[in-house]
Length: 259
Figure: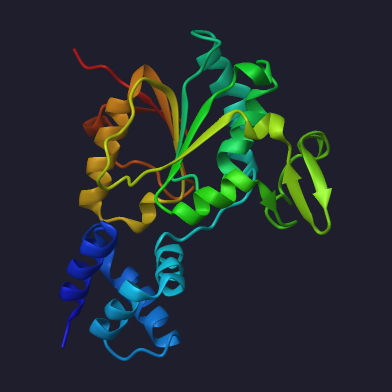
């Protein structure tokens, strides 16, 4: 009979997702619940099914990657980005390099484009958006969202950049064309470099301290010397200096170059 450790090994072989980097109690509870919902009793039965059942496999990946996303999530933080962070960054260059990491279904990178469009022309904006979940990335490329996803979005953006399709909202191509989507695993893939701003919000809360330390160090290396990291509302970096970060505003950290 397979135990949870054996299950983690099998999942790594099957998906290259290392469950050891996720908080165990929380993740095991989620997985056990999913297995039970699908009427499997043992880990080995479920793993065998994942290998042959594409629908089950996709459900597992979606469940694992916890896609909770919405436009303009935590509006007060987006106002700080608009009124203080973007003006600060734009003093140095008008062609910002921005990475929306763990972008889920695209709400975040599209919001970044809309806010940045207040400062520079749309045809000059290029944002890299990545996520581990292939289906989430495909949904992001489609750019169709329900009313709940856009309820916090400023009305000016909704009217200017979306088309109503039935009960849904489709983001206009002029915004979509500013974002390049790619699949990327924060726990194992190489990080791109040379960024002015990296946005990674409400994802690292699911990872172990060991995994967080590794990711913060890699984010620091990915930033330019005066680059900024924007984190989620429950993710303040404790002892940021040990990662060469300095708090700039709440939830915003600037890269600090040590002599």
